[in-house]
Image (cartoon, rainbow, N blue to C red; front, side):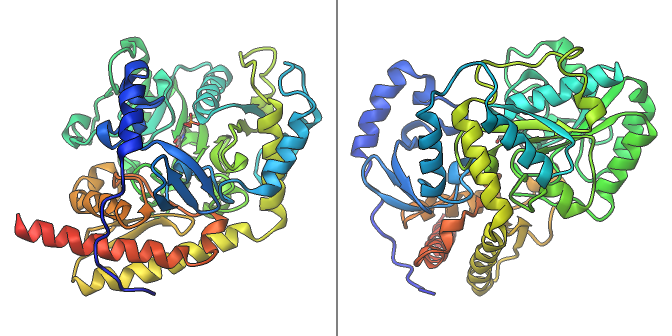
Length: 447
Ligand SMILES: Cc1ncc(COP(=O)(O)O)c(C=O)c1O
């Protein structure tokens, strides 16, 4: 491993600044998503290949964001792209059902607990439909979700998500239903009940208070938007049992964890079978493939009793991508390779942090992990606020000047892809971290 810590010059930004000036005239914030609107630091991308990404100014980075997780094989994976290109020459959109869709859903069912599934285009749609299906199945209106969990951008998902000031979440014994931004009807807010992660006592109180109205608990089995804070021993099992006790469904949101933590996702890794689950990211290697699925008796409310549709649901491009990616995940050791790479990076980061005498914990799973500057792993999103996330953010920004690109926000984990194992990408990521940490500590000592 290299131990170089000399800061490189900050990456050139002139073309991106020009693009930002142009984009912000027409796209609010200069982008198509609030999550990548970083003001003058907004990144405009040119291309990616394998585990690398190049911005519009030609700066090269080891990509640790991987598009917020979907790119599990690597950018421009020829196995997937060639298959998609071949299939799309037959036409991409018919609003008729193709064999690609059937094959993709068969693969989902083969790899996971699902009896049946339907394709969507985004994770947002998948969680929205799973929640509606649970309401339709139980005849109840309310859904419990966990603080700090992100399930997409529909109204029912945007409650108690990611405030930086966690006091906004209210009393932990009786959390407030905190809408993220304006425009979410109060009537909807009232149907979504937030609960701190890893807290079965509060969950029980919620069920005892409102159980007869609760259709489902939706949970990402680990806190993917708080660097992958893990469920404590017995927590997921407790949630499973409580939903059964109170006649509610359990929805696993596996948009980030599905086909990444294990072939059968977090459900397989943690040994818990939910009633419904949502999938997206890894199943398409970046193509917009997503799905919701689960028990046949619940899924069979479609098509008669519960609404679901979409002009692009199961479109050829996404279905072909999912077919290829899921076959690769099933037939090769890609997931084992991801974990090996994640562990290699962790093995390289640990001595760097230890040399500085800083407390730290790794969070999540090696295929999708974070590092927190804290004495112990927090149990929930409120605990994330107590970690030294300012230091982490400074390190993440510093890594960009050193040729590696994690998300510049301590909530987002580092995502591994198969191609990170190639060449010296692991060493480059570790070396960027090493230099950035030294710089950040020096800057904080000066201030
Ligand atoms: C756990 C989880 N659920 C749902 C979503 C929404 O997925 P999409 O961005 O495809 O709408 C995300 C996106 O990051 C996610 O991480």
